[in-house]
Image (cartoon, rainbow, N blue to C red; front, side, top):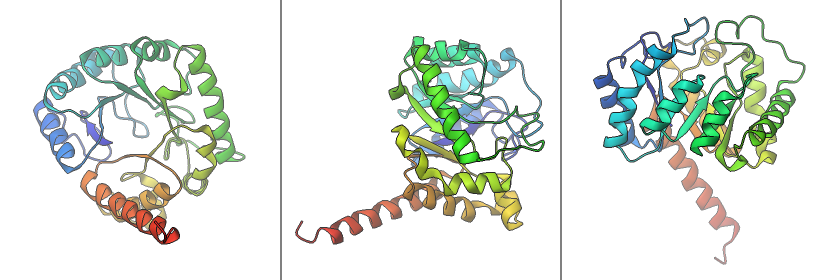
Length: 268
């Protein structure tokens, strides 16, 4: 899943693709590099980010989604927490809603997903983008995120969103400290029992900088290590800024898996 941030204040690309033309060109590059999905977002979710209005978010993303729907064949995702934005983006050509605020009290966005029969990424976040890194606290983060998924799948079903429409995202870096993120990565296999695709976003995230003492631009090797680990734990979708490098890592993993399977069954 290639990331297309149509924002002036993203932590990772600093507004390089805020212009719709730049965002569309970047998205086409990501597809050429091997992206299977494109995730278009118009509101930064970095810690302490300033919220934007629905009208402004739509102004940013709709021209990009409408044009990409004409130019590319891969599915388009809208990265939003607003039901009105999700509805307009799905009408414009998106087919998936990536919801960073699935810990919501209202069901308006879920009913939009149900009405459109769209895909839905259910991501765990403790708090809001403005508060999520202010002393996040868990007793057992792996268990608590699993309980969150159980609760949300049931609530989604009551709104008409079937489990076959849902992918799960543990929300690395969203209301988690370094130890919480590492615990979640180490415990990814525990979510296989949901029998839903797992999505992981570690690309350029701050916990890698805290772990290794490296700046944002130097975090790709660490993100690829997480990708390899997560792929072996059953994660199926990787949300990334660095599509070409991530695809290379995943192709090597796939080749090794195939070779290992052949070695385990020498008669075949």
